[in-house]
Length: 172
Image (cartoon, rainbow, N blue to C red; front, top):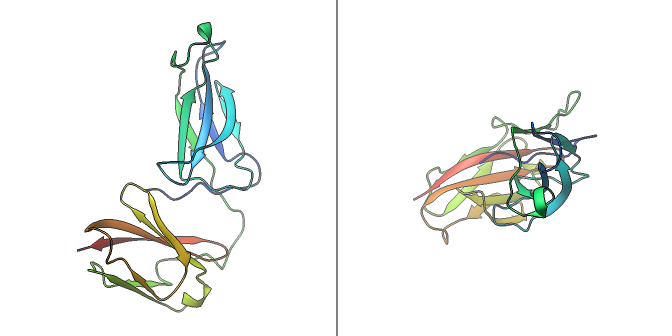
């Protein structure tokens, strides 16, 4: 599970195609869940760049938009690569790292605890399953109960005003 593409000044994601002319048109959609809902970033052809315009995205979907030979949806398009820009310029002393927060016990059968010298900076917490589906998003507290979830691998994200840190958790 990757981290979200974060909106920066200018274009954030580029779709690279190698065909010229008509028949290579597509539309780009994004979501924070693999199950949607999906939001359109617009249509493009060949190589086109997009600005997330303030949104953050974890998943992208490129679809044939049916503008091409005979206007047939599903006629296809050429896709070489997708690149994402996720850069910040300068030094940000408010970025969290794994050295700032401890998560325990791991593996766990129910409750997860958080401690660390920067714990008071955490604003919210998100829990994702192994497929990247968001299971919960709450205001942060020092303990999280995941006892109602099945055994498996989960990802916890802790968010402050400037960054997000992700931990892999095993539920017994």
